[in-house]
Length: 170
Image 1: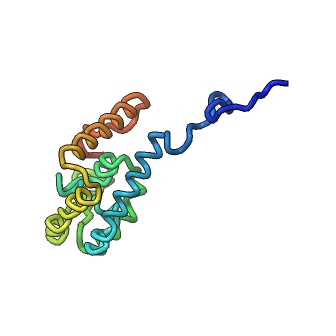
Image 2: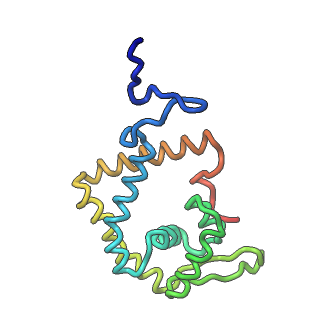
């Protein structure tokens, strides 16, 4: 009888090979890096009274205020229904205002309040905290950001669906 011990990765699963070890999977590296970044941001966001998803919504509005719920959802690659409770909390906190679009009553337009605009200047510390925690130079993080965005865009162009360059709207 011969030794038939298999090396990791040689195992077959239905339709293919066994998964790579976790540390060899790009998806896990991206996911866990995202979690680490959120942990760096959390104490700063807590001081602002925001969650990370709320920060993302505000960030979208800081770049272009007065967007529809569908436009914000498209930009963040989320479903509109996912945003509704989050937007209600931001509105209750006085950071955004939701109104019906007079040209299309089915659309809800989200706009920053004065307080929502003012918080932007206090949120700039997030980028600096990431630089400090990573120990990387700004140009290194900028390059990594471009590479990850390019990967994301290539994947979406292959599978269809979300495109970051679509104009906001429903």
